Image 1 (cartoon, rainbow, N blue to C red):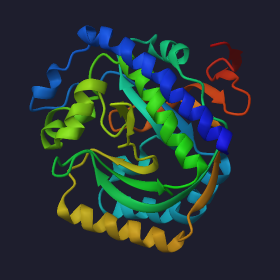
Image 2 (cartoon, helix red, strand yellow; image 1 turned 90 degrees about the vertical axis):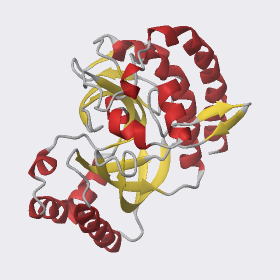
Image 3 (cartoon, rainbow, N blue to C red; image 1 turned 30 degrees about the horizontal axis):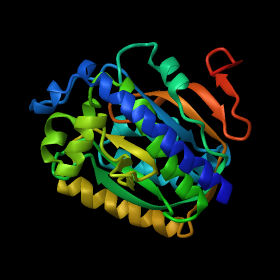
Image 4 (tube, rainbow, N blue to C red; image 1 turned 180 degrees about the vertical axis):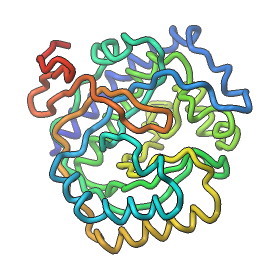
Length: 289
């Protein structure tokens, strides 16, 4: 585990050189949507994520899957109940309409960590920015301690520095009404990296705002006080069902495509954390980086 952390720490410094390269590319990145009152139109969002192992998905489906769907239907959230999503924990997302972006991401990607051991634990609701109204999510957090968590955080720092320069502008869901409600630190991240909630290095020190988690509900409906109270209650119930969380070993990291709210709609490249091999999911063939 010590070597796992060391590997990811080294990746941070590799990522720093990518951060320097990013400075030269800022001229091609359009931040104009940040000053608008509406969300930037969504074209294509790509990202890097750890997909949940099949056994973890099975546990979630057998324990809280039914109650969750029932709660969504009771509260009129039919779209949320059927919304497609490949269960995952995000590393970083970027927006770019260019269809060649995933291949560029694969080439720029820092060396991933070894398989990560962590515990998924504690359900809670969250908004993109408090008071913005939408989007909002029901999340399952990760215990913030241990070698696996530290490796996740270190890799977020490196991957963000390497991949953020490939964006064409900010993620649509952090523009308009969300950006207006953000604090200064969040706004700074969106202006410089296109997304909030990521780790950066400032003055030689890692500054952490990344919060790795698995999202169960993606909603663009207005997060009214009534909905917030209802789904905070749902989260409390789920915490009673799974009080000790779910021990999880993440064995792959994938380049994926996502919808506006951040739900993963398809896998593109899947990287094995054991041996570093890369699978082109559409063709089933192994490809080189």
